[in-house]
Length: 563
Image (cartoon, rainbow, N blue to C red; front, side, top):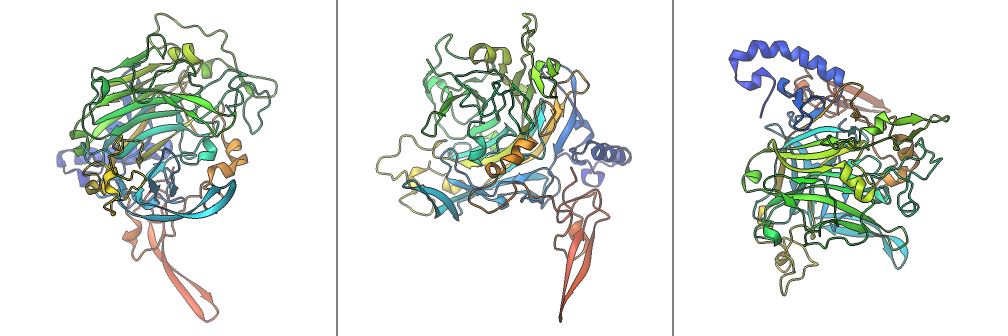
């Protein structure tokens, strides 16, 4: 781990310079707001591999302070999901205690075979009833939803994958999603995920809730602007062993863009390569990468006319045991369509409308004004998508929505489990503690738990100046979300719980303590105090010791920096 503070570095010949630069870095971090003061000086900017220009750090988390937790209301950057996961045939329950920082400077997302009982609303014979359910696994997810969002730039994550390289079953992921949908809160994603489409189409209008046909969409939204929640997957790792069709070997990881509308006719079949001219062109692959023939997208259906097709533009890159034993750097370079900023205008009502009629593509412009996505592994190019190709096939676009960051490990019977189900095995029963149920897992899966997904850092960079289309914010002038989320609050809270707000305010102090050091886990918290206060009620006198945080730290025990 690279640590800034000289008392941790052990490099005495640089001690004097480090102290001088510390004050400058602290000032920069306070001004920037989202930058972790622990980010080293050489991480304050990066050079784009694609555009060959310097991008400046706008967000970072180095996870250096041990003991940070991410319960709702405890951290200004991240929120740990604490609910059942209903998506992708999930076998796990996301528990808030399964994501925390550990000694050594890492975020630790732990997956374990632990039973969780919970109450859930279920539809039984057409009637909604509350049922007592249980899941046999717990895991962790943290996300920056409605706290930190950004549009365009460079995302870089250094991480070590969980579990065993040759044992399938875990689904670690690093990804982004548009802020209009909150991951695992399925009501928020209906007809919102993964739309990235800004045309008025009567065919698609009924399936895209915020579509470009609407002249008065309300909730602060702009007229004739199609919106949604596209998904960009920086990494989805598939551990396991064996050779798959087309010579693909496990383990590997996928890099993907998931968008709607999707192609509805002459789609490639899962397991087959697309026929020439039948799929997206303008996709580039690294030396060892290839098209993901196992997933071209999915049809979203709730049994009525609102069904629609989503596409997955995805590539696979083989990896080996070293990615599960050591840290590697995963990087995304995201350039939104440049016309989203340069070609907008305001109408007489103050709403922004868009004029695409004058946009032309230059044959000499490698990436064009329609933007691009490019993925890298340890500075090596692995996959890329050109926005012009998306527009040509389906009229969709490289995402320009404010996106938030998600880090998690899932367990799903659809990801890396034995297919077909082993003969004589009950594959509806997934339990590491019942002998008759373990046959549904790959050999060694249960023994590999608990498994730890370790994240060293998350850093996000953007271009600067008026010519950049990059922005920071979950609700921006060109892509507002705040009023829509406020007006549809019930979609963004867990229907199984009674929480009235999607996110609680971040607590500033108030955590239990015994001494000042209990409130000084962060090096910037040198003036934080553990104080004693008493409350009298009748004959009783209750006294408590709680943390009082300095201005440079926050959270109940002052372990996080303000953002």
